[in-house]
Image (cartoon, rainbow, N blue to C red; front, top):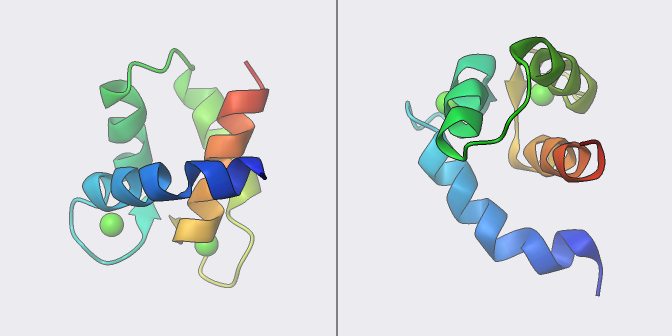
Length: 79
Ligand SMILES: [Ca+2]
Ligand SMILES: [Ca+2]
């Protein structure tokens, strides 16, 4: 089973919970709030870098669900 497949249902609910304004995308601010809530110990600067790296489609500055999964993968593999 792939990691993404395994995480899917959980990530989906995390994503919609983090999407405060309900636009279907996560802004950097929403991601930072989520990370704070999850008590993930990462410096803001690091989060910003990973956000930019995960943000790979045409809709820059916002993370779609797939991009958010990429970000979560980065966070779990790069401690
Ligand atoms: Ca949003
Ligand atoms: Ca994007």
